[in-house]
Amino acid sequence: MFESFYGFNSTPFTRNIPTGELYKSVLLEETLGRLEYAAERRWFAVVTGDCGTGKTTTIRRYAQTLNPSKFKVLYLSDSKLTPRNFYKGLLEQLGFESKFYRGDAKRQLHREIELMRGIQHLQPVVVVDESHLLDREMLEEVRFLLNMKMDAESPMALILVGQSELWERLQLQAYAAIRQRIDLQCKLIHYDRAEVESYIQRHLAYAGATRDVFSEAAIDDIYRFSSGAARLINKVCTHCLMYGAQNGHRIIDDRMVKRVIEGELS
Ligand SMILES: Nc1ncnc2c1ncn2[C@@H]1O[C@H](COP(=O)(O)OP(=O)(O)OP(=O)(O)O)[C@@H](O)[C@H]1O
Ligand SMILES: [Mg+2]
Image (tube, rainbow, N blue to C red):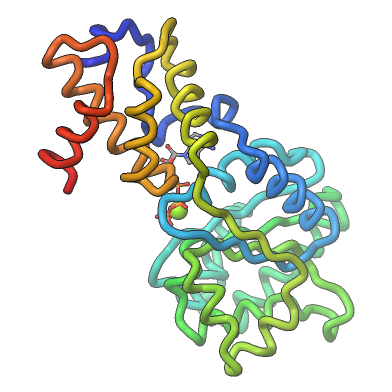
């Protein structure tokens, strides 16, 4: 394993990185701040970004940083989410067995949320990940969820998280009623060259590296290959570390990165 060769005490560039150890880009901090504001105000927010740019990771961090005595985060990630499973999933996370029919389950959810807010003073924050995969019916249901007292007050903060095509879909006329209700939009973008370097350093620091592993020119190539998407950075770095360890190279240079990309990743 490359960990012992490089003297790491944990594995960098994996999805298991604890949320406290993340690379805190300016955009990540800003997004967390804006989403916290959305939670306070029970806003409807939409978070989009290309695949692998850190949306789910941002939500993981968000769920950990929100004050647990004020907010209750309910997280759903189901590509085939139906309205019935939506209510069922939320009720289960609140510790209740859902009523069978959709209408009953919806009323039950609204009641439980009212009680939670009234008695425990907890604000629900509903996060629906992979929202770009939701069908029209489900997106419409989301819209109805926000209307509790005839549009006067939203019962919860709702955050739709999805790939960039979600935002494009919401621009269609058919989704105007949903779009108009959006209070906050956050777009996650790819890292630039400097951020890719800081990102790599953060993962290496988390792993306990005591010296640099990637040369500057290697980082240039990692940036070009990944176009600054975190998941692709992870992939190319992991392959480079395996290659480097197998071949006894403590420093990974651009020639090695090119060889790995051409041989294993292209
Ligand atoms: N700020 C960060 N610090 C450290 N690692 C990160 C950070 N953001 C993302 N990552 C890493 O990048 C990987 C991909 O991120 P994530 O799964 O959040 O992307 P995503 O935008 O949700 O992708 P998809 O659209 O495919 O769902 C994660 O497994 C994580 O290891
Ligand atoms: Mg994701």
